[in-house]
Length: 292
View 1 (cartoon, one colour):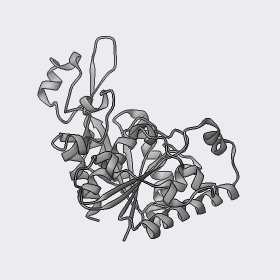
View 2 (cartoon, helix red, strand yellow):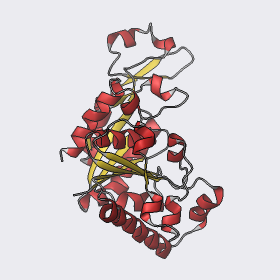
View 3 (cartoon, helix red, strand yellow):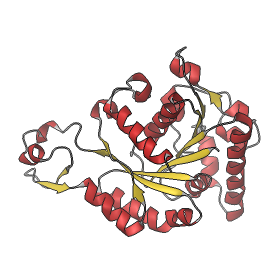
């Protein structure tokens, strides 16, 4: 049975693409055949992540100008460079060309979006039947847009990523109450993933703060006035509050790994640095997801 997992967020900058790509690679290393699909149509970035310009884009398949085998590319050799691997990792990329993006921006009407939904269902079916895939991992567009909702609709498991700021917390709550309840009603398993919490590294200006020394691993800090007064929030309290209000489960939070976030190019940490805390924590999260 093929599982389809969509990574989504209320707004950008929550690490969707990094989590999606590393999840796909981690699953491939366990012997699974995985298809990683960029359905962030409005701001595609997966092609830059892999430094590739494919001959055919996902857009070509959706426009009936390419078969699924032309669109979903075997990336195993280029990623592992001859290293023995139990599984396979494929990827499909969205076209970053302005005209390709504008085509979705200017299109509207319920019939158009129904047609696009049917195409996404067909894409999923073609990947499953023609490529014998175990997992499909989807990187979606953030927010509440028709395209995002369509992409979520073809998945059986949804991961809603968020960060510890008020706008993202409230936006996530809105998504859960207004959108995700419908998916849950029809059987989709949904999780909240809080990403980039404090604990792995702390800003230099806060190193000597008594609050950091007291509880560095479980506290989120933000400057709230010119005197560097700090307001403290506990990620666990935020997650438990969201679960209480929405009934949606949460996954183990991921710390902010600054050596990854601020590197010139983060690329598949689970492959290049399997002993990094990110790699190990992500595997723990994957285990939480696939056990259901």
